[in-house]
Length: 304
Ligand code: MLT
Ligand code: MN
Ligand code: ZN
Image (cartoon, rainbow, N blue to C red):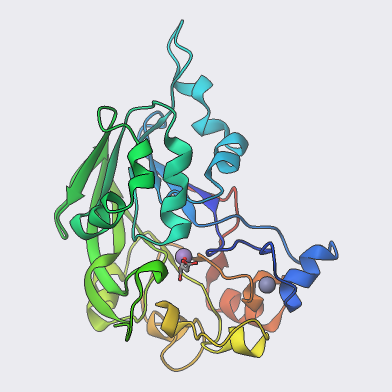
């Protein structure tokens, strides 16, 4: 299995276009301790030819342009001028950072679109996604906990993780932490090697630890380091939890939750621009690295 991190940041990217928080300021000042990161997406393949895109970010066009393996030249047959190694697309929730890139994929290119029935309904309810020609793009409602093969040799299974509805569907009191079809984690398996991709997760349950523990690779929600870091950074009142993302640090954070699990490798992904792990040498960065975590970056290649 080969995995490419196309975008390692959370919604907004790092730096975010309108943000002058302490960390975005380092970017704007050209400080080498921070590396720009685009919005949340990875790609996976078993055969190096047919690729599954996991989440379609608003930065998708630039991500494809930067990635040789996903160029149309890689897949075009002789005399064929419109082509793509991306044969299937899977979205793990309906958030803008995971679905806006579907609009980039509208250029009369066939692919299969996988998501839970609930997320497909959200897309279906928004006519802008009708730009995906139904004669070319086949929506496929995935049943949870049921393996399927979106591209040759790559087994995929979706499972529910604690989450919430997309921000733009929030009305009244929002139920955060529900396990249903709105937020899923992904198991990717090739020839007995297994990776988990969980870019959004409101809490680590015992069931989740049991499910993913011992995997060859875990790519996990690294949105915020501390639950209240956005408020501390002066950029808003929302906590990580309220956004559907548990913090890395603290007694209920992911560092602690997974501390007894053995993984072949583990990396934080979907990192918000306020998260101090983005700064090389920071105490937060050193803390996650000391616990054996990597901090995903755009262009990171993994072969779990
Ligand atoms: C999130 O991960 O919380 C969302 O991407 C937020 C958003 O929609 O901007
Ligand atoms: Mn997001
Ligand atoms: Zn910022």
